[in-house]
Length: 385
Image 1 (tube, rainbow, N blue to C red):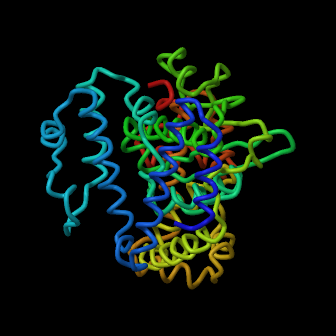
Image 2: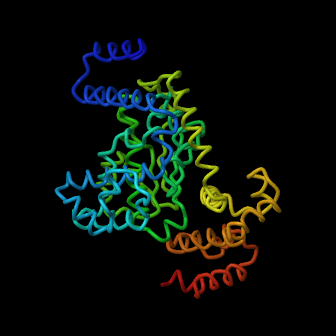
Image 3: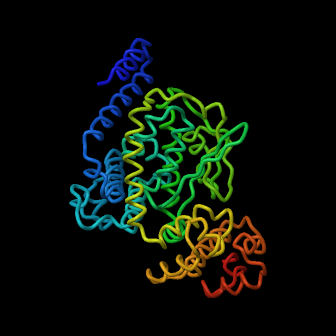
């Protein structure tokens, strides 16, 4: 162990921490062990199939939490169509999104816990995030840790992206669900977003040894149990909006992290960057464009030329590559528009004319025609139903 870690161990132990802080110190020690184990491996040994490995690890964590809630993991797997062998060793097949969605449904139903994701989030630790969690732990400040998390979130999941914004008095963390998945699997999406908000909040405590409380939380629904959401998220100012966000006082942005290590993070950052490049090169263009459009949906759907500029290519080259994958940009853009349109209509918070404008239609009639082509009904009828 380096002299850096010895000094920090001694400093924390000499402080004669109270029991809750001592518990966090134990977690710090466990994290250091995980870091050393990671660095001892070849660059491509453990993270070559990182997304699939993370998904299996996440399912394992979910099953572990369900067992703590007195459920049978074998029964949950059977009901959800998951082969337990898949979770034990890297197979050719991976766990599908449909199976994970069924796992959420069954776990929530069998525990009789409609807030299963919210409570699951209280039990997770940064080790569940692998190399991304380690980048967070070795960051200098909370702001840097959040920036790293947002930068490399795509290595963990393609179900949502994380965005950070900051002004003079506060900063906001926003989780943006992947539009198609949110439409197809709304139950899983909602519980995953609840879990992620809680996880970010509670793990921040262990980084700075202070109980951090948000100034405000927004959710795209009205919580069924407002007091419980307020307890877990430590916030009474929970408002219904179109987004999943948590806003914090800006003083936390520069709060130092106890496990910060610049040299170690530089090594981890190189590993994560290499992994990200491999991931990007293996990911199909239409998936990358879909993720980009979802993450930037609040800016509107760009034209083909605008999108090509963001991808540092020409519109003709972009079209040709998409054609090779059997899709057009218009089809991708329409898919995102459809998902956003149904989401906005179901929320009941936007007039149809405003939704039309948000989706880039100059005329309401054009939006009406497109929506009827997608769903077989008009926006008005869909909203009323």
